[in-house]
Image (cartoon, rainbow, N blue to C red):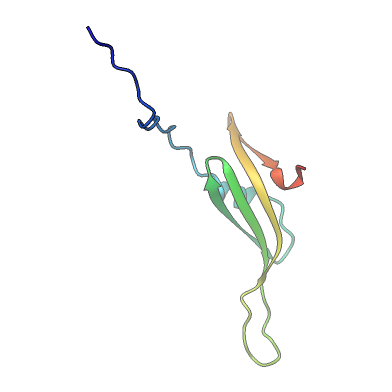
Length: 92
């Protein structure tokens, strides 16, 4: 009787997909008046969030789209019913 062993070229089973919290993070993080936050899931439970300040009409009549004034990498986890955010931008 021969036993079969897994070989190195067999791919491991991927983990189950996690919920994307990007929209919830955008609504949760602190914003100043006039700021807008756009958050994107990078992978797993890690997110990149950018704080945008809307542009104004320039002197020559062109409209600027805005500029990023702050950016953070966040880890998001759900503990019960609470979304917990860990700011990885502050870590050494």
